Length: 428
Image 1 (cartoon, helix red, strand yellow):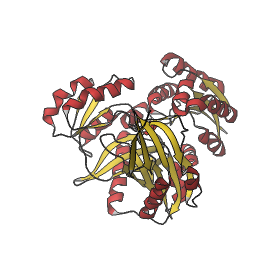
Image 2 (tube, rainbow, N blue to C red; image 1 turned 120 degrees about the horizontal axis):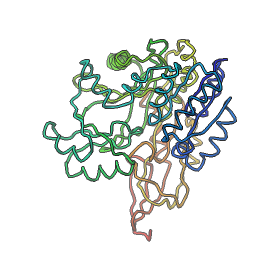
Image 3 (cartoon, one colour; image 1 turned 90 degrees about the vertical axis):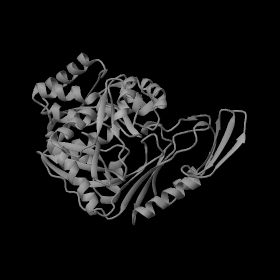
Image 4 (cartoon, one colour; image 1 turned 120 degrees about the vertical axis):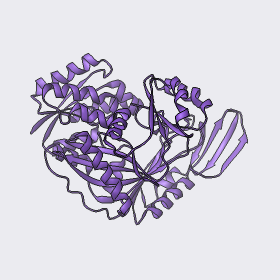
């Protein structure tokens, strides 16, 4: 078997890696686990430790200790590779140390060009690929001075945060201080991008690269929630290919060629504008939001295991999708949850694969401003087409009724997205 030092491997990855011939030495940060898994973080890490062939923890924000942990793991295991396909925030240092040790799967530069929004946007401009007007501000307080060169609205975004955090459609400069407070809440104090607002349907391209050859697994249709926040309310995978989606996929491959990406998964987001496809951003990892799960539903293809096959030099054997996989997110009014009903009835529907509503009476439903503040999701078994999948998701939403108290008002909602509201006076 091949020894692999892997930073923050999710549980689902470890046995799949082992099945592809790898021994996994896992490195995790307990604080990162808590951010991702909340109260279940300690148990999650115990399970990772039990599954992995080796395990150690370190503070990813302590760069010296983090780098030393990778070096020690490589030395202890005589590892062939160091790999990180988890959260972008801790990815770059892992690739820099891997490159120093001669164990890198991809060059640090290629990963930076994909993950860093400014680096990617600058590369595309310099190469004349997918041209998008943009400007850079060293701090959010500098954005107002750049707006004269744009037509409002514009998209403003931090260059390195993930999970849709801090991405905002700015229609009025007076909203900048409130956006700045949002960035501060994320403890982000770095540069921000100002970009022209791209209009059109949005997609993501899921790829696996093997020895520099990019294999398109498929194109995912993204369903956006209400603006000004760019948070998806669902994803559809498996719709028939069209000339437009083929062009979207070709553009993602052009990006991966341009950055020199050599191995592993990538997730590239693209908007199909009236002037053609334009790249929004990309990441050197699998798509989030459980996109791998709906790929498996639609296509019968396990992209999580296949990425380890790619690392071993084996091309993915993905076939054509024979149905549509759909994940739809739940979104209710924010406030204290007073009551909920219909979850069990929705979960019992024969087309429901997974339904997650992780709240109990007394919990606070947060305002949905990023992928981390959604109110749950439903994954549907394969549908005949996208229209059927979305109709099934609406049926689930209509079954779930919540009642929340918001600043002295009690709000009842039939369903979770675009449904009727009932508001009555309440002692919150």
